[in-house]
Amino acid sequence: MAAAAPPPEPCAYPAGLLEEISKKYHDARLVSLQDLDDYNRRLYKKGHGTRCPGLVRVDFYGDGKSTWALALISKEGSKQKVEQVVAHHVAAGWETRSLDATDDTPVVWREGPGKYEDIYGQKKLLATFRRKIGRSE
Image 1 (cartoon, rainbow, N blue to C red):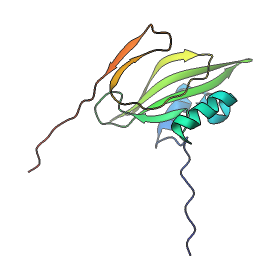
Image 2 (image 1 turned 30 degrees about the vertical axis):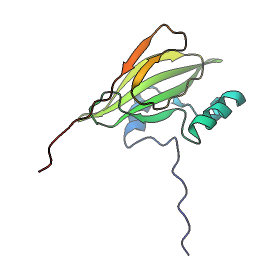
Image 3 (image 1 turned 90 degrees about the horizontal axis):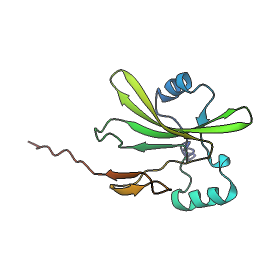
Image 4 (image 1 turned 45 degrees about the vertical axis):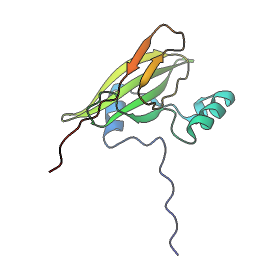
């Protein structure tokens, strides 16, 4: 009888991304469930199960290339800083772009196309779904 393989680590970086993140964000690590307070941990688990709150694959650019949203936490003295980053795999390797930073503990997850606003109602985003249609021969 063969033993079942352990489930994959939910906060495992895709190949090569950890090295790139370590260069740019020296002391940062992915936000994990342990970084959330009890209420927010239960809320996250209810909506997202055991997925990683600091890493999710997204289609941010609509080009089909490997793209990930990250929430990276680091300590600055006695304070914490969380940076929201998008990492896009291109021919030359990984390109990263910081979207925002906060002293709160945000999480990341994937949503479908639609209209979205920030929690304060100040920023709006329209995410459309682009599908490349080709002919099969």
